[in-house]
Length: 313
Image (tube, rainbow, N blue to C red; front, side, top):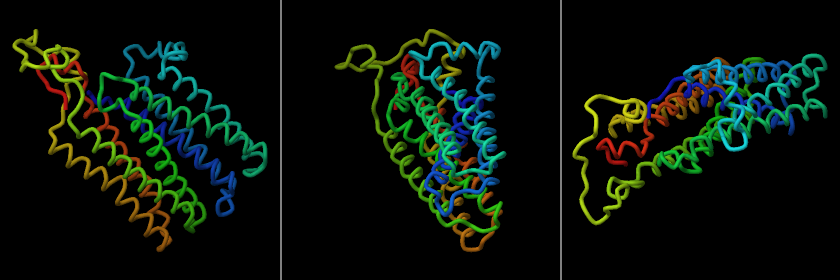
């Protein structure tokens, strides 16, 4: 499928923003290593809302007529896209009220603040689920039609949030927090494993073929005429394919940027107490998962390709 930058930015930044909010609420709920101080909490909230805003604003660039974006909210009963939009907008009041509360009271662990934080975190996690289900319910895309898609969305969003939270803590105090770095490292490893399972699953031959699509299962079937001599909307949007060797190389690069290097940098930041390395690790995670988002779209093969002489993998 055509990997539109607008949708890549939407899924990448909004997932990271919601993941950062969820980790902020979790750390303050259980006061992990004493919890976050007011400054750290406010910085995390501002970055979280900025990420979500970048994602939502970029998504409007994917629309043919952006001024009609409000219509996406009207089908929430049946559309996961509409539900994503509704919950994403609902996130802002609670996150903003928590930011205001911390700014004026300095209370990150009091009851009212934690209620606001947890409501924002829950709404954000629901939004990530809705975002993943937009793709997981599409039976026309075998690579997307799996519960592994929302699971990976959760893993990546939380991994981005954890690395940014560890960086925020270290850059504001000058001292690393072993617990936050440990959480970030564990989530990065879990994301790498889960993504590996997904890549193994989509690499297996499966899905419809031109034989099953036409019903001639006992015969050899081939396309004699595609019905057009030039590219069409379908071939432009759904006809993108990545050579297997190139895809493998990009996946290795993605693992290097998003998982291996950040883990090494976090370890050095912990033992060497170099805050800049924690920030670099957070930036690399965001960049690496941006590459993963590109792969997620370009590797998806729509069933319509069968009627253009392309066999599903």
